[in-house]
Image 1 (cartoon, rainbow, N blue to C red):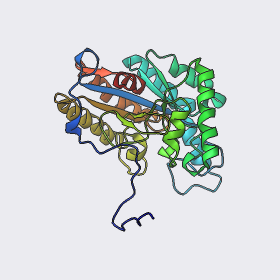
Image 2: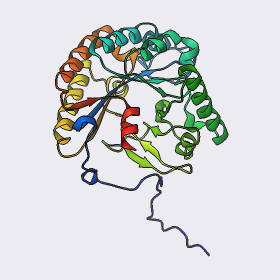
Image 3: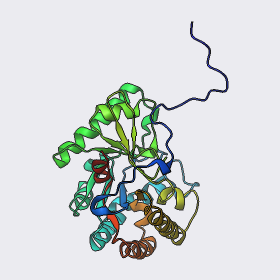
Length: 295
């Protein structure tokens, strides 16, 4: 007869054990570098008439043309401006893409993937859908579909996944590993890669920022671009200092309909250029390269 669960016992995700940052192995990144830095660009497409998505205005009509067209500016204009900037600054982009981008604006995805050092990362089919709301069967079909479409598009499998809106079910890590993904960007619990347990072997969690991220910082929290860029600079300075004791990972998460707006892009370019001039001992890379080196 099993004993009842004590009322003070709390639920656990059972995916990884607790480990303090001071317990991280004293290894370095390639060429003895101590901080790994990547910049992620999220290419997203939304269903017209769907209420899901970041909002420039909360007072839009039910048929939300205002917010839909604002987000579509990223695919039509902002994403192209940003690709030019990444090329100018020689930043290898982590291209986090909805598979619906292949159907809606494949030329934009090609522009980004033609940049040297780019990595394609799966981001669900559309940001109009939260996979954590799906049945296990439907979520499995979604993940398999995204792997198949992106593999066919680029001629090789993709290894990384970021859920739209970081939406997960209890089964997501198992389904990702089952469908050939080797790492996830969903969990923002560390500044180093962490192995997670699944039914199909280890799935590596690579740090992805939820604050050095233009959506939560600029839209719901109302920060201006100058504040966001100061946050980027502060994160970089502190992690660079701490990485002298233990290797660290820093990500910067961007969306073209936000930082692709010209007045924000102008300030962001200055900040990224400033960081790049301090990268002699920094590994400028992508999440997939970080995952490969961490295995």
